[in-house]
Length: 367
Image 1 (cartoon, rainbow, N blue to C red):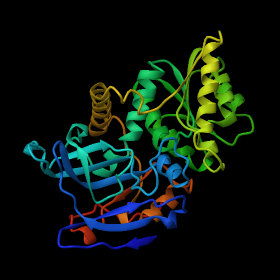
Image 2 (image 1 turned 180 degrees about the horizontal axis):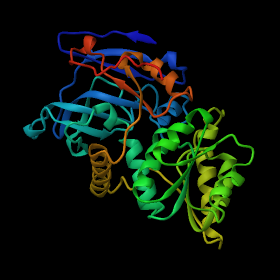
Image 3 (image 1 turned 120 degrees about the horizontal axis):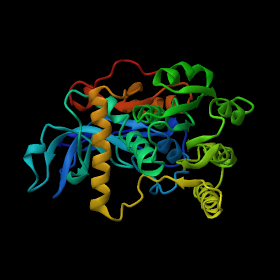
Image 4 (image 1 turned 90 degrees about the horizontal axis):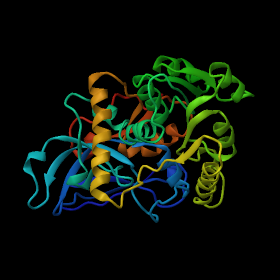
């Protein structure tokens, strides 16, 4: 990974920049002065920032609405408030918060709006909390606000060993639902430990395998794969069932427009909803409703607070696949894309470089 240094008299920060469509090794590490927060902002010292499917798509230039290159990735972050802007609330200083950022999280310091802060419960490890920011909000909303899963229902989670998938499994089990989860053979023991009935996603006839467990079909399918496989997901629904699509992983490495696979998928779901089939299909976008900013923040804060409280209470667990120093973001991206890990790869501070204290690195840079 290329490192570009920039120093001055002020304290300096580290950020990872995505300069264009590059392999992980093409990520750049830059140094620049730590910025001062303006009105309504706080300066957050990063303690953990995740490596998710969104960043994997962004480096390929295939995330639906990513900003123009160059930019700093980082969809979510957990950190401690170091300073507040003019007129800001001094009570925020020194407290740990989670923030959904979409971009900018892969930095040792970042400016965020104070109104976007969601407090992390005392005693919760920042890396563990980080794995449940975007994953937890996504899983909570899809399960309860879209599919409205209740006790006694049966749901199918594709990729049950992944970040969103493993959270979905736990939240569905906590709600009293039965869960069928697809995963590779190497991850099935972990999926079973979460409380799901595992199925090898490479089985020649996935439909028959699911029907053996749920002969009448399932009440909800959570599908992050998209592509032509979405047809099989819809056909697995029981009468009155709900399909929730939240990604197009099957097209990750396909050349061409980043928008077309998503638009094609949404069009197909809308067509199914127009037909009298007794089932419903939805595309989940975590940013839907953001134009109503206050209501969006209130719902986000409520959902994330609930997820983090469940984590603090031990009702659900967090799976940190690896903690990798920020300056080794290329290694973190490579690991996250390898398909060999269970849970989420998390970036943590380079303490020696930024002088920000213990980086929480447990030395586990691979799964």
